[in-house]
Every structure is written in C-alpha cells, then in structure tokens.
Image (tube, rainbow, N blue to C red; front, side, top):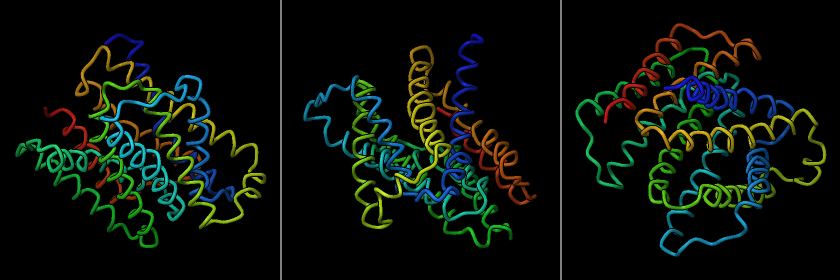
Amino acid sequence: MPLKHLLILLFIAIAHGSAFPFTKLVLNDSVPPILMASLRMGLVLAILIPFWKFKIPEKKYLPSLIAFSISMGVLVYVFMTLSLYYSSFISPIIVGSQLAIPFGILASAFMLKENISAKKWFLIFTAFIGVLIIFFDPKLVDNFLGLFFASLMALAFAFAQVFSRQLRDLDISLTNAFTGLFGFVILLIVSNLIERNTVSTIQSISLNSWILISYQAIVVSLGAHLLMFYLYKFYTVGQIFPSYSLFPIFGIALSYLIFGEVPTVLFLLGGIIVITSVFLLHKIR
C-alpha cells in the first residue's frame, strides 16, 4: 500500500477516535445530547444539498434507504451522545463501540442468512468477554447507563451496515444526504419534545462548541466516510476495515490528553481482548 493510502487510513482512524472526546467537550458545555446529534446531522445535510439536488432514488431502494438513514442518522448518533452524556469516563464507551463488528456479523447471519464460521463464533464470544471484563471495573460502577447506550450505538451501527449492503449502487452523496435529513429532522423533533427550549439553547451555544460540532460533521461524518469509500476503489473491504480497530487507540490517547483519564488494569485487559478480537474478525473472510 502506497504512503498516500496509509496516511489516509491514519487520518480516518484519528478522525473516528477524536469524535468521542470532542463530543464530550460539547456536552460538558451544556449542549443537550439529542440536540447535539441533530445539529451534527443538520450540518451534514446542509453541506450535501448541492450534491444531492433533492433526487429521489428508485422505489426498490427506498425501504433499505429509510432503514439505513434511521439506523445511522438517528440511532447511532443519538446513542453515541447519550452514552457520553451519562458516562464520566470516555474510554470504555470507545471500546464498547467496537461491538458494532460482532453485532454486524450476527445481524448478517440472521437477516442475510450468511454463514458464521467456528473461528468467527469464537472471536465474537471473546469480544463480549472483553466488554464484560470492562463492566467489572469498580471505577465504572456509576457509568452502566452510558455503557448500555454504547451497546445500543454499536447495535444500531451493525444494522446500518447490513442495510448499506443493499445501497451499493446509489450515489454516496444521496445516501448521506438522506441520512442527514432523517437524523436532523427526527432528532430535532425529539429534542424539542424532551429537552425543550430548542431555539434558545441553539442561540446560547458557544463558538467553541459550534467548531467542534462542525468538525464532527465535516471531518468525521463526511471526510472520513468519503475517504473510506475512496480507498474501496483500490482495496477490498477486508483489506481496509481492520484499520477500524485502530481508532480506539487514538480516542483513548486523546481522552487521556484532554480529560486525564488513566486506564485501569481491568480496562486495559478487557480493551485489548475486544480490539484484538475485532481486528481478527476483520481478517477472517
């Protein structure tokens, strides 16, 4: 792999890893979690409108496109922000998000009738064991709700990947625009119903928080995602996706630098098991 492509992979991993601590910074600035997820998707939609041009895909794609847009644009991002909102520690949430891979394999088996080899079953089992070890960390006794939402985030991401397989022939900008549309509108309505005072809250958001929200919309949701599809032109999914296992390393490092989080022995043990299991799951065809 040429140096240019290696640098792109590194950028993607750093971008995904940075999303978690940067989201926590915005939440700590009194931005409600559901509203933040809505604004992030709203910016994605605004950027993609000129490329989307309000085109509607063929009817055969609509069920999968709607399912993908709700799973990815609504559930993944709202559960991500809620997991960080209800947790004082970021690193376990980052590692918990890796469950998206074993969840995705299980979802493919049940929904697409794909076979799961004995090796994959073993690695799925070890990944869940790793998360279970993290759950037993005494420091996380008050963060179980955050870990629960992180598990739901991983499950939603897994379903999104299954639905995305039926959208391969659609233009990327159209798919992402629909995702932004569903995420922005649905989450904005939910935020207004639950969190209240939406307009006044938006007006009170600081410039720093707007910069961080814009970073996640432009760099993470659009930049990293589009660059991943660019690499798919040259490599198979199996060659590219193992790098997805690298982003927790950068996310945990940033969590230490920004919030001073020092990983415990149990967290390190469980995290190593989860990341190794996920990496090997990517490598098995």
